[in-house]
Length: 287
Length: 327
Image 1 (cartoon, chains in turn green, purple):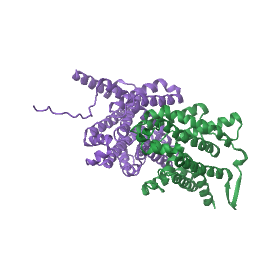
Image 2 (cartoon, rainbow over the protein chains, first blue to last red):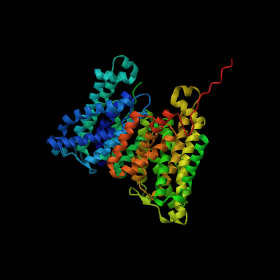
Image 3 (cartoon, each protein chain N blue to C red):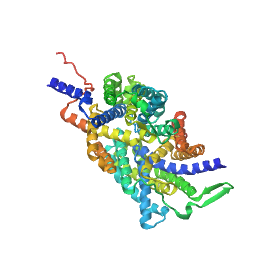
Image 4 (tube, rainbow over the protein chains, first blue to last red):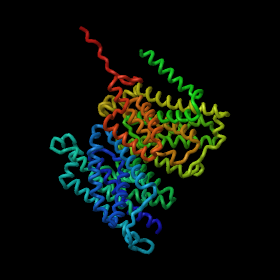
């Protein structure tokens, strides 16, 4: 039963990994850029939520209403002023700029909040659980978060395939020059993509803050988990990414059962295993 | 004039060679640090600036080299200077199976893949309790005195090894870029499709560069931890120390130039000696400077200088010379 429990927890945390991944793969899909600061943005959102909750006394889950728009606006301007000028034929310059942003965010958070690890208390809902069978119970909060993650990914699919904005994303992704000829402002489309990515990052940050301890240096690991979920699931397929997040979550849970030192390592090894056996991921997009 | 120039350069180079006779202990240590950063930045630049393999995980090989040195010196009693060379070979050997796996990731995703590799190494070495596990281990005094009996002689040897590592890294880059592989890399940079159609094996070219760089980076790593005398997973596989600083150096000096990493290292150390007291803020300044350089002068300081003056110290470019038209 201990093992079943671990695997169930792994599945639930997988939803969070898929959230880390969704924003990352959106950016890669639209502008072929990997945002190295992605994980640090998640952590920055977590701190933003912490500050908002402390200042307003809002419930952490309600802080979404403020954190999401704030992060989206910040993301938009970060893209317009720092990233757009470097986006061109090579991926080196924008990649290195996001690396610089990552260093600034990490150390900026360190200056503002010290290296102490923090957590966002969500009240009684944190300990509430549903008993499935004896010895196996599901936490209400992890379950809610998992369902929210699935909904958000569903929502992103809708935006991507059913809206004007999504059409602009897809057009720019397929052929940037032609899209520009069709009167799409590339800079604005990229800005909106980063804004949407940052909005998802904001939710992921709040969930992270409630579920686990975080500190200014937690960003890179979130980036890596998101990235692994993308590659395990298969590029360009958001549902695959969700599956990738779940696979990663289960791998880590099983690793942790073997020995605490193996938790993260087991996830990385499964990532390399998938890369070796199925380089296009478990659920590649049909092309 | 060019002759006077090269004589002047030769004099300056030889002054560095005989540093043990004029520099103090602290200066020699600092110079040793300068040399290994020149080596690391040159090697990173070879990967990112010439082979299109942008890595944010070179700390994998720095740390690997460090640990191999400690293992060889402690368990097998290998002479530390010989262990540096062996660590380099081990780094290249381990890179051979790793590279095909990482090469499955395209462009920017390759970068994060290299980082995951470094994390695997970090977590893996933390599991080895005979190498100190998560908290690390110090090099036993017997291994240190094994380098040379007297302290001045030891410091002299260590200094020259550092200088040699920098020279070997630069020579590797220059010779490689002037060879057929260098020509292939230039062709790849300009158009992968066209160069493949001309018979260039993209995969093998990149593999050769990646493995060579991995080996030399491991050598530099072995030296770094021989100088530090202590290795731990967090120090050995630190992203900040072995990748962020190195990228900063290459970016401000000039990516895709041989001189860039040298210029960048000098600037990096000048900044560090003046701003290091600021601590965390200092790192934020480094990040901001790198972003501004990337936005305003993507070819770095050296690239900017070359564009202004047309001067290069190490000619690696090829020019097409058209024969005069017969009348």
